[in-house]
Each structure stands twice: as structure tokens, then as C-alpha cells.
Amino acid sequence: MNVETFLFSLENFLPFYLTLLSNPRIMVFNNFEDADLPKANPNESLETISANMFRSLFPVEKFEIRAETYRDKGIDFHIELKKEVASGDLRYTNYRSAIQLKATNTIRPSADGSFGIQIFSSNITYLLNNAMPAYYVFYHHPTKSFYYENVKNFVLQLQHKNPQWHNKEKHKIHFKKTLDQQAIEGIYQEIYTSGNILKRINQRLKFNTAQQNPQRLLIDADHEIYSVSENIEFIDQFGADLVNRHYFNTVIEIEKRSWPRNNATPRFYLFCGIAYFQRGNLYRALELLNEAKKHSAEFDLQGQAIIAHTILSARYLLDMITKEVYDLEMKKINSLEQAGSFFQIEKAFEELSLNKTKPAVSIREFYDSMTKIIENEKSGVIRVVAYNKIVDAESVVLFHDLAMNFAYFIGRVKQPLQSRAYREWLELEKKFVERLNGIAAYADKCGNHIGVGNLTLTSIKWNYQKAFHHHYLTCWKGRSFDLLQSVDEKMVQMLEKLCSSLDQLAQLYEAMEYKENMISSMVLKFEILHFSRHYQAAQLMKEKILEVINLYGFEGLKKEYEPVFSSGTPHEEFIRRYTLHMNSIQDFMAKNKIDCYRMLSDQQMDSKTEWSIKDFFKLDFSILPEMGPDQNSNSKGS
Image (cartoon, rainbow, N blue to C red; front, side):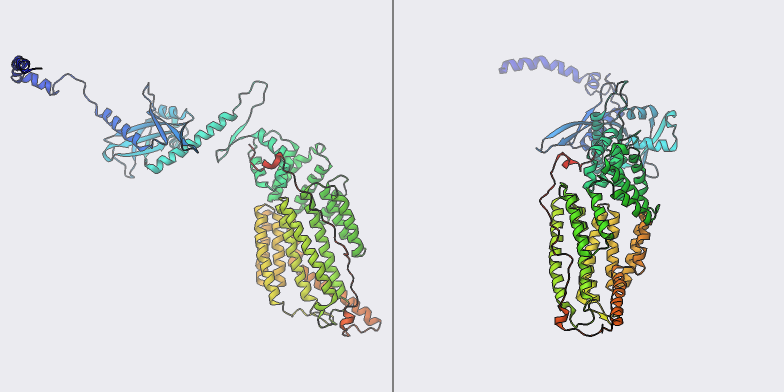
């Protein structure tokens, strides 16, 4: 535009502009003060302010907030969660929540600091009808503060006050909880948990036809979803391995989540019964095992023997039967043909205990029986059980032979521990301990942790017995032991270490739910403390043992251990039996005019020894467990 054109335009515009300036009505219109335009609503402005500020509270990397703008029936926003994956990317989850936002300029806080507003019952019901979590959010504009309440929590309050709350038109909700970042993180977790539950339900939900039985789904307190039929099937299929691996808690957890059930498989009842037995819940164990017993025909002879044995043990522990009845019934079970290796091992050990022949003969017969039982045994667990029984038997024989060899010269030589008999016994002990350690290593390689624990108990028991044999066999005077002679201080220190090991072993047994074994460890500690002359500590240990026995209702076990606590420890029993044995020998010598108190020379002391075990039982550690499809069976049933 040139100058002349501009001047022409200005000349034409000036008259119009001067007219505007001289007309006040036109100027009012220009300022929007009296114009006929829609007025702004303060409530709408507050809604906008509250909505904008509400959005700003939620981190965009975790939340996607969408406004409900079309035919809003009580929901202002839907919130969807985002989840970060391993790559660092954010993924939409479709885990959602509904929000109704309330805002105010005028409501003042109550005396307790809360803000109360009225909510229609129809709105509460509307929010509850969706499975997703829902929240009421309240914005107080004067303080620019947000408060919130979970709709379900609000309904619980109403339900507590009046179960028929929905019959009332309105209810007052009191907002106290501040919507800060900690609360928002809690809301995220609530929505996430709810989303996971719904996902699991949808994955498992089946729509049955008229011919199909309904499928029961359970939601536990930890929001885990379970199918009763699948739980029963899982225990039926993998229960044996779970029990063998000592996952008793897992079995019990699954059993508890398998209700309601009209029936279950016999194997389900068996494995659950064994798990409860090991946990010390004997009455529940009997209930389940008796259910299994009703279907005995569906088990092989070994399964029937296991059921009978566990029921019998539970009844004995509960003092429903006497020890005599228990032993008689166990003898019947052990005598069953094809009852399985475990019961054959028990039978062989029982026959050894009752064998009245010389130890050299009885231990050889025991070796022969055990060889036949395990020569074709492919289970490492059963082999460990058998080997443990074998070393138990060998231990008895070795200490018997030590005492019998000492009977020739006890009290009649100055240094009995320098004798040929004791030197040869130490060589036997060396081989015995090597075998014991080898079996423990084999058990560990087989993953048989309870077997390792039992062998550790055997090792500690061996050292305890060695200690009191060592002590008493060196303090015989005349016709009795010198019971006032103090126990060697180094020996006491060694025994104190054994007690510490027993504490750890008892904790292991308790963690593995082997209550009887745990009590056995505690009893052995009592015996060691008593031998070490720590009588006060032994008394405290006794009280602790009885407390545990009473806790689990093991009345039968209480009767079994009563003699131990009444001067019946192994070292006290040894004193009584050996004193009687020696006195009978002395009386025989005196009757035949033989001086039983005459001191012997070293040559006479070493002139004779006799040992029942010439060659130890041959151990085979080549059989190792095979890892099959059951290696995953330590996971929870579903």
C-alpha cells in the first residue's frame, strides 16, 4: 500500500471512528458488560479447576485418566493403569477404576476435621455394580486439598450400621483421608490387585452346560484363585513326591483351599492325612486317613500298610492305645507280604532287637536280611533309611562289645584306655564314623534333607554314648562306679557344642514339620545336659519338652519319655545294667575262689579281645534319584 492509498483509507475511516466515540451505548457493548451473552457458572468453573488439579496428581507414567463425558450417570473419570515391563517400555493394562469427583467452595470441616457430603444410594449401587474398584474424591477449593474414600469401604461402614442401608435415599460420607502421593500409590496397588484377580477369574471361568457339574472357584485372603477339582487332581498326582520332599505345608495349604468338596480321591485323603500327621495335627490326620482307609481296596499292599501305620502312630501319640497294643499292631503290619521296603526294614530291625543269640550272629543275620531288602531298591530315600537303621544297629553292637571287653579287666588296671581293647575299638569307631559321614553325604546328594538330619542325630548320639562309656569305664572301683568322679572338662566342652548342634537340628526339624524328630533332639539334649551334671539346665529342657508335647497333644509320647525323666537316661541305664553284670561276674569269681580284685599286668590286660563285627555292611552309593516331571511339584496346586 502506497502513501496516497493509506491517506485515502484513513480519511474514510475517521468519521466512523468519531461516531463510535460519541455514542456511549456502543462503548458499553464493546466492554461486554451489558451484552446478551451466556453467563459463566461458578460451579462449572470449580468443576474445571478440580478436574484439572485432579489430573495433575496422577503421574502420567503410571495412570491414564479418561473423562466420562457422554451421558454421565455418576462416573466422572476412568483411570487405567500403565505397567513398566522389563524392557523399560510402558504398557496399558486395562486394569481400571471409576472415580466420582465432588468439589466445594462452601463446605466447612467438622469438629474431627472431616468433610461430610450427601451421596445418593442409587449412585453407590451404580459404582458397586462394576467389578472394578471405585472411589469418591472430594476437592476443597479454599484449601486446594483433595480427599478420597474407597466405595467398598464406605459400603462396609453403612452395612455395619444398617444392613438395609440401600432402602434409604441418601447417606453422608465423611472424607478424612488425604489424597497425597502415598495414597495414590496405594490406589495403584488396589487397582492392580483387583485387576489381577479379575484376570485370573476370567482365565478360569467356565460356562457349564446343563450336563456338566459346576466348577467351584475360590478366592482366598491372599487373593489367590483356586479350583477345587484341580487342587484334588494335583494332590492325587503329585502328593507322593510332595510328601517325600517334606512339603507338608504346601499339601495342607492346598487341602484347605479344596472346599467345598463333595468327595475326593483316596490318594488325596492319604497324602493330606500324612501331611497333617507330620504337622502334629493328629485329629485332622485321622479324619483324612480314615477316609482313605474306606477305599483301601484301591491301594496296593504298600499303600494299605502306610495307611494302617500312620493311623496306628497317630492313635498311639494321642494315647488312644497303649504301647503294648501299638507294638503288637506294628508287628502285624511289618509282617505283611509286599508291604514295601520301609516296613521290611522295620521288621528286620525288630527281629535284631529280639534276637537272643550272640551279637556276632545276630548282626550277620541282620546284614543278610537288609541285603535282600535293598539289593534291588532304586529309591535313594529308602536306601538312606536302611543305611541309617544299619548304623543304628552297628552302634549298639560296638558299644556292647566295648563294655564286654572291658569287663575282663575293669577296675584292675591303671590305664584302661591304653588297653588293646580300647585301641582296637577306636579303629572300629574310625570306620564307623567314616561310614556315617558317607551316608550323610549320600543323603544330601539325594536331596533327602530329613535323612541328613536323622544321621546328624545319630552322630550326636554316638558321641554322647562314647562320652559316658569313656567316663564310666575308667571310674570303676570295687563293686560300683565312682559316681562322684567329675566329668572331664574337655569332654564337657565337647558336649556343650553337641547341645548347640541339637538346637540347630531341632529348629530344622521344626521348620520341616517333623515334630517327633524335633522332640527326639530335645530329649537327647536333656540326656547330655544330665550326664554333664548341668542339672538345672536339664530340668529347664525337660519343662520345654513337656510344653511342646502338651502343645501337640502327644499324650502317648509323654508316657514314653516319662521313664527317661525319672532316672532313665541311657547313661543311668548303663550304670544299672553294667553294675549288675559286673557284680554277677564278681560273685561267680568269689564263689570259685578267684580274686576278682587282683591287679592285672599289661600283658594280661591285652591278652584277649572279641568283636562281633569283622566286616561292616557294604554300602552302595551309586543309586541316585532321577529328576522327572515331578521336579516341579514343589509349586502350589491351583
